[in-house]
Length: 320
Ligand SMILES: Nc1ncnc2c1ncn2[C@@H]1O[C@H](COP(=O)(O)OP(=O)(O)OP(=O)(O)O)[C@@H](O)[C@H]1O
Ligand SMILES: [Mg+2]
Image (cartoon, rainbow, N blue to C red; front, side, top):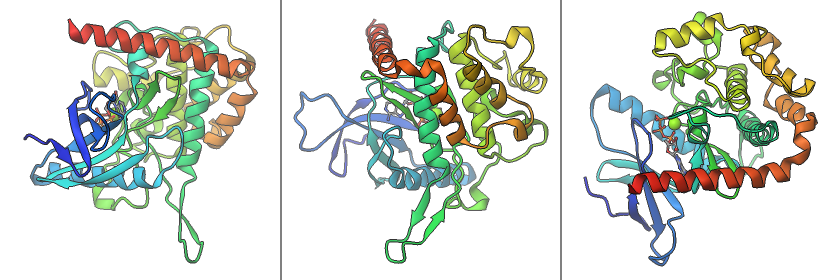
């Protein structure tokens, strides 16, 4: 299928992205000059049929509904949406940079980032997650607000976008939950296995704010340790690793952290959801109190340098 224009946007070229279900295409606004770098990314679900498509479609429609509502500097904004020749699409900001999985070397050799950079990235994410968890629709006439109970359910490094200017964004609401999602379209077992809280695996419990916090803590652990926390050769072994995980085990400890940062990791990786923080806001507060948070601006420009380097390396590799 050859799409050239979507509404008032012109498609430029496909993004080499690792999406399993959607096409990602860079775009320009029709009025933008040709020499301007594309500023938009179109996420497209190609036409399909059958039950599997119906489910994909419902989840994508839901993602689009959420993106249209959410308005936060650490979440890509939607600039348009629609359907053309059976292809459902949403246009959002293109974040020029790399995702966190790429920066952490998850597709090659895993590596760590500094504690300060970790705290900076997680602070931005915790702020976005707190916004998402507490988001409510407000009726403009009555000013009555209705919480949407949004859960991200797939917090993982590949869904964290990093820009060349050091911005950090949470993306991929494709498997999110909210009260807008019809129960028949809600597949409970969504998410990336290696970031799934044990209660979701052992007790088949539904996702909660606490399971999002657990995934955040796995991401934090991986940034600090420069290793994969749970990922094993196959799904079964990954599940086994999650179920057996013991944060106090010497091989799992991360050394050299301030007591505050250490507490954030330990509490939110706890097997018992009751011992994790009460919500993303508490995580945000604790991150802000950690001594590693003091150099936030420096961390931001340090991250910008790392991202630019990684993005340039990737571009060079693609040209080879
Ligand atoms: N706005 C954006 N700007 C730049 N890159 C992006 C953007 N959105 C997504 N990407 C890149 O595309 C990848 C896939 O995006 P996303 O996770 O939204 O799609 P998906 O179809 O839900 O993928 P999957 O099912 O594989 O998780 C991301 O990991 C990221 O590398
Ligand atoms: Mg994704």
